[in-house]
Each structure stands twice: as structure tokens, then as C-alpha cells.
Image (tube, rainbow, N blue to C red; front, top):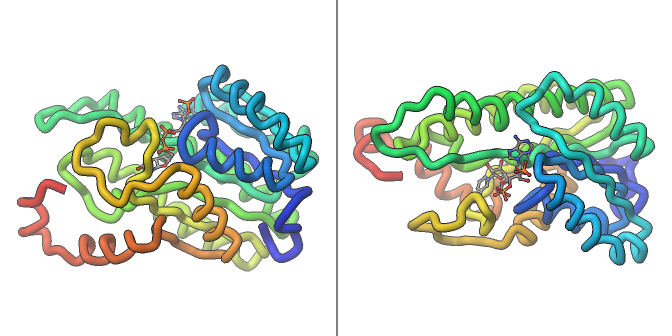
Length: 257
Ligand SMILES: NC(=O)c1ccc[n+]([C@@H]2O[C@H](COP(=O)([O-])OP(=O)(O)OC[C@H]3O[C@@H](n4cnc5c(N)ncnc54)[C@H](OP(=O)(O)O)[C@@H]3O)[C@@H](O)[C@H]2O)c1
């Protein structure tokens, strides 16, 4: 994923949040390209299904998948797990943090436990995994980190205050990491998807411009390979984000977005 890493084949990637949706689609694409991929999430049975599904593709491409059950809220487990997975992969070129939760929140609900769960997975897990990758990539002077954030982080929305907060935190953290690592030959890409057809959006009202997880994965990899800093996926969401960021607060608080 960097100038000195082959674009196809022989790459080594670690995807956190790989059991479904965008993360699983990324694993499929990377293995089909010949990458050795470590796929991490809580639902071990889905990871095993994914590995089974990919066995023919892996044989054809020379790629490989290894799976590991892990709860991203358990940040203290990350350094040891990261080291073990990198050891099994024989090194690392790409880390994707795709794990995320967006629980339903009622209009009169202020549930601190639920809110802190989102912080632990969407922010705590992201920091733990990206820090581990940053340490390695800075030392080896190569590597790419991709964080799957959201257009939801562009403003504080009444629908799910803490989900927006976690994505805004991701955006700032990933920007700082990008600025810190640039001089060491390491690139960090922040992805802000619009609506993607995954478990997370199932049954949600008002979806539009919905794309498949596979299409999202294709665009994520394109952005990372093009060394994009921040990329809306698909790109037309940039316009929506730009408009939304400009709406004055006195109007925004009356809107149901
Ligand atoms: N779908 C959209 O429209 C959309 C839009 C903007 C941004 N995003 C972001 O895209 C990312 C991927 O979401 P998705 O749409 O692909 O939804 P998804 O199918 O629900 O995928 C979420 C992934 O995160 C993993 N995950 C959740 N909690 C975890 C935990 N505690 N530890 C480890 N892994 C955990 C899940 O695996 P397990 O449950 O097996 O742990 C799953 O693999 C998320 O960060 C989401 O916020 C999605």
C-alpha cells in the first residue's frame, strides 16, 4: 500500500471489524488480490464462514486469511494480539480499523452505559489498534493505516449524539496520526462513508445513495492506494458534508438529520 509495497500480492493486512459489512468486504477483496489477511472481530463463527468462503480465492491468488476473535472494547489486549498476528502474517503493510457500533437511541434517551460502549469500540479500539500499527510502521518507515469513520462525525446530530461524537473523535485522532507519521513514510487515510448496505443500516428509514459493502470496500482501497487524506465514500457525499458543515447552528438544531 505504500510506494515500496507491491499493490498486488504479497501484501499483509490486518482488518479489525472483519466479520460483516465493509470490513468483511475488504477482507474478501484483499485475499482475492493475494494478500495475507488477519481478520478480527467478536463473532468467531462469521469469521470462520468468511475464511471457508475464501479458501478457493486464496488458493487462486496465493493469499491467506487467519481469523481471531477479539472484543475491540478490550484495548488492553491489543498489544499482545497485534504482535502475535503480525508475527503470523510475517509483517504488516496495512491496518484497517472498521469496527464500529451505532445502537438505536430514542429521542428522550440518555443512557451513559450505552454511550460509553460506543466510545470504547469506536474510539478506544481505534486508538489501541492504530497506535500499535503506528509504532510498527514508524519503525519500519512504511505502512498504511485506514480508519473507517463516517460523515456523521461532521456535525453533532440530535439522532445519536455519541455516535457522531465518536466519529468526530476518530477524525481528529486520525488526522493527528497522519500528520505525525507523514515524515516517517507512513500514510493514514480517513474514510467517511455515506449510507452503506450493511447490518448497521438494516431497517433504517430515509436511506439514499445506498451502496453495497463491496463497492464501499473497492472505494476504500482506491482511496488508500491514492494516498487520500480524507475520502467521502462515494465521493458525492463530500458535497453533502460541505453543505452540512456550513449550516448555522440556529438552523441545524431545527433539522432532523
Ligand atoms: N453502513 C453505513 O452506512 C456506514 C456509514 C458510515 C460509517 N460506517 C462505519 O463503517 C464501519 C463498518 O460498519 P458496517 O456498516 O460494515 O457495519 P457492520 O456490518 O455492523 O460491521 C461492523 C463490524 O464491527 C465489528 N465490531 C462491532 N463491535 C465490535 C467489538 N466490540 N469488537 C470487535 N469488532 C466489533 C463487527 O463485528 P462483531 O460484531 O463480530 O464484533 C463488524 O465486523 C463502522 O465503523 C461504521 O460506523 C458505516
